[in-house]
Length: 258
Image: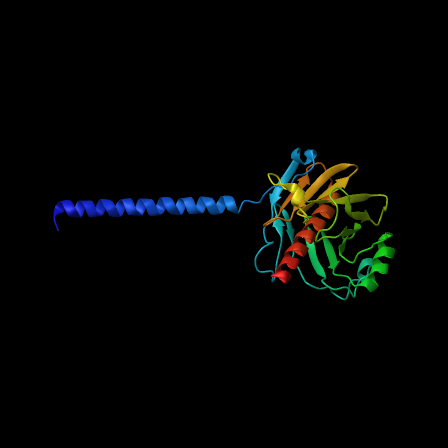
């Protein structure tokens, strides 16, 4: 082989390597942009003085699952309840299926124990109606309790798998120490950049207090949360507890349907 041929062969190999690297970079860019979580269409005030976090721990293996976003963390999520829980919510619904239990912590270091339930039977609907002083016409709902030494909040979400109408109340969070204090949960279906008239799934939730959105959670891909910087630690703890429950509950229902 002549020197000229050897030089040509080396140049061809270099060019081939460069093309392969370029193609690899293009593939990586396509993967990154295709995996980018789309944004929900949310209330305008959530674009101001609000911190946005991407969720970690939602996807993948759910054994010893923990959820994290920013300084908000959970203990390992348990699928079941300790029989030692002795407060109204736990006593009323100890026979329910699909139980979740975790401790939610916020950046200030405060934490609360969270119990959640789903997949109720028809015989349990009267218990829900009495407990929350509401009237339910369907069996599809998700409820829970948030407690520590000083706070005691309960929540309920109607039709967590969809079928709720855009803009109507999708649930409530109620302070059991002061039942006049409530946070409304509103389903979000619209996604930025999409023809939203065809959306029938609930893609996330907004949380409304005193006619103002104070937070939101997206259930798309790995998940994302928006938390207002103006709320106090108690509301921050309650809000994150419910957000985490919806994120975990949604990922659990997906895994059951796979």
